Image 1 (spheres, helix red, strand yellow):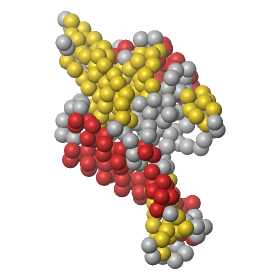
Image 2 (tube, rainbow, N blue to C red):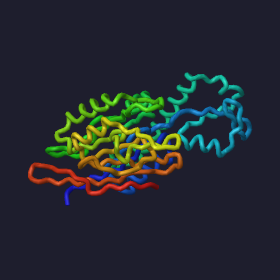
Image 3 (cartoon, rainbow, N blue to C red):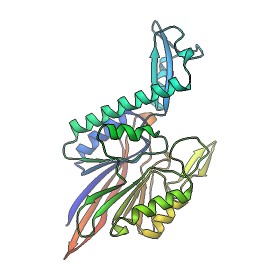
Image 4 (tube, rainbow, N blue to C red):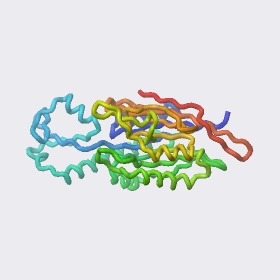
Length: 302
């Protein structure tokens, strides 16, 4: 038996502190070498409320039940509570954006601190996604946290690399990091040119490959195709060892593109459930040559 490399892959947590803490605990419990995040880390926006006594009201002065307030939080929104009369009525887009940046920054900094405190023997690899606004990059830089496009997972004459790409193909929804298919292909090709052997690469691409079990989204009562043709073309042509993907919460699946195993663990962050992929890679060395192969991969939740 060769050297084991264990990965825990989690994606699309959308600002859920509960799911993030579960990921930290799972990384320690499974004794993985790497905790890998696949993007869409932060919450989706800010929901301002006015508190009067023990009751909460929205900007239209509608009374919110405790269940409704809990639903807002579970759906990935930060809640700003004001006790000042008429304050939230005067909020404009600039005010909301400023509050959103403050909430996101505070949360990410708390996560970085939690990782430093609790993950002593586990390395964290970050990717971003289409729901992570551009200022998130600055939060990482300002806290000396590296978002690296290429990470060396294991050293050898032909190292094992993880390639991280946050972009997704165009969708009907307005979000960040949405680019044309050719941009995704060019970025992937640019990253692959920097590795020794493409079969010793792991894709951590937020967009799932087209025409696989990973790419169907349920919208308006029907399943629609939303995967990236460029990601599929890259995986077909260059046959990386593994493709880790997210973006489509309901399409949790493991599939194959040629010899490449592709995985989307899905997401149930709204239910505060951690969905993850636990992956074991074996490194075998013969002479000066190193070969990596998947020993096991499983999708689960908790």
